[in-house]
Length: 213
Length: 248
Image (tube, rainbow over all chains, first blue to last red; front, side):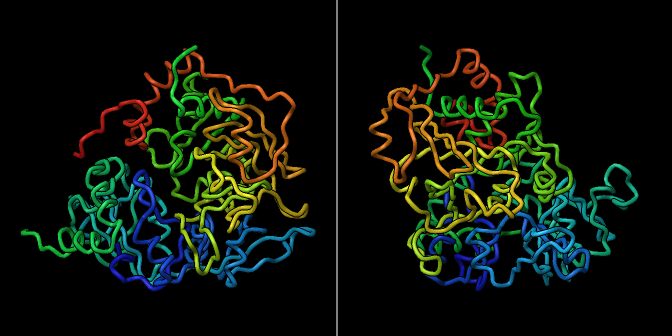
């Protein structure tokens, strides 16, 4: 939706789709219309590059990629000969250091701690980013880090700048363990987004419209 | 002969390809491989282990998105599935775009994990339901992941087969070439030659793909279809009539 609304200049990603509802039409239109710059990647490359930032090291090696056009179109990635091996080429990826990480999670507390359960890529994102802004389903009474059942799945408030409560904040997408996807609404979005006009109408109706608190 | 749906035949074919392994992982947008993996596990009394991306119930990983890739890099995943907007005769897959990369005529979602998993998972099963001249091409526009590499590239994995709505091909990694293994019921070799954009080997007599057994169909419909609805509600509804759950 950010792409459709013209808010994205460059996109580094391994894929954008609407899942069971098919291609993401505003993404497709932006790429074929050349209104965004693409940096195509593959999922583990992004995970690894964010992990490099998490560790404070300049790069991370990754298997695969050699002989692909993904690598061919990424002049910022390098291939070296494994210094511990013998004739063993391997790709190096520069660290990705995000300015801001944004995500939605089930619980937050007054200390800025955020419970993410098993979705630990959110932990990596928070570790790697200069700032982290989170919306949560609800506030937890007490301190999440003092609860032995929850603390292992909690991003410490140390890494978190801001929390806001947004009930059903993942809607119409699912929040695993809490609510499923709203399939009817996703189908409506997919249909609306098929044209620029339909997408603009969708924004007016569902994004720009102010809802009474 | 049992009545079966195309999706059931393709999943049954994939089950045979998976074989006797320890751990099968299923990625995004892969409802037919998910049907195959879960049915195989049901038939095997809990084996192989199945990790279904997007599922809470059918998923072991607790260390975030990277764990699938770390696990694969260590060789702890035996089978994975990939598709492609285009697939060519050398086993190259294209999940990115058609035409020039900087001025694409068509754009697909992106490479997902293919640029890595295609190299490190020993058995990659390619699936592309639409078997046509636009999907099975002489040469892909963009290589998300190559069918093979120079011998010095670390590559324990790669494609072993390609399943389409018309047939099953095996893949010879040494020769980088597909061979027609079997033709699905009600399809013909001539039709496959006509609708395939690349050359492939074929024996003089091509057998028919074995249809799924009554027991396999029962497992798919009664046990696995409702499980599948957790991650693929639209597919489970369309193919098996599993009611769409209302958003809470």
